[in-house]
Image (cartoon, rainbow, N blue to C red; front, side, top):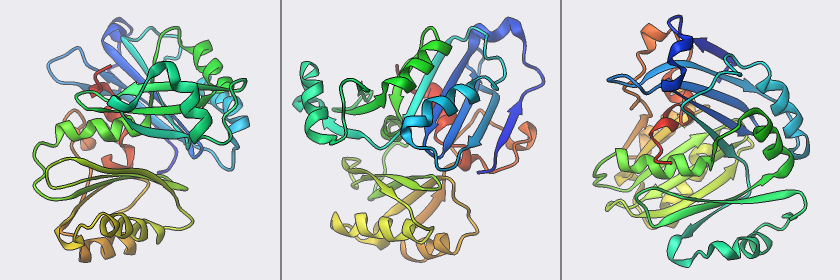
Length: 287
């Protein structure tokens, strides 16, 4: 996705108590959205994405602070602020197996580079589900967020993908959801009954890795590719040869477009809606 900033001309300072803002942080870049949730139907107020190149985690906080200074309405009071962390160190855990007082033990066991002095461990319970996401955020990054937002909800990007299922209804066949960035791809796989079978993150060295991993996770879970549906979102294009390959093998391939509160022609956004996902639908999370 190209760097882009959209702001609705009808924004009113008197309406910010109705607006929800989300900030998404990843090694590929930062994004934000502001949605008016106070009317009959939610309405996109503003959104934007800023790519960054080759920024190590240790310096991510500096880049984030600089970017936050450029955001519109940065000093306004919103109804809700959500910060979405899309970094590598995350773990999906059934709630029946998780004990909150043992969070540090989970981090020490599963994240080899975890350092209690430099890192903070966060647990998020996925709504209407028996699973949660345990993830690590550098304390330096967390301090930047706290400096800019007095109150906020902190979640991992996997939470958005996992909560999205409750808005899909009955799937009827195995279903893969892939959220694609320039350098990595997050994948969620459900069986025909809607049960979660896989949630993982894959590094991308080229666009050909996208069909490779989607074929692999489908077959490794003993599903027939020809009977499995795929939903794509993020930094991907309907015109790619790799997408044509997916369309020739999977039962169906769709691009995420279930955003009823955005009229793209009216809003004047320069790229397709599916490229702005999943951060535009944060307001639906049950925090």
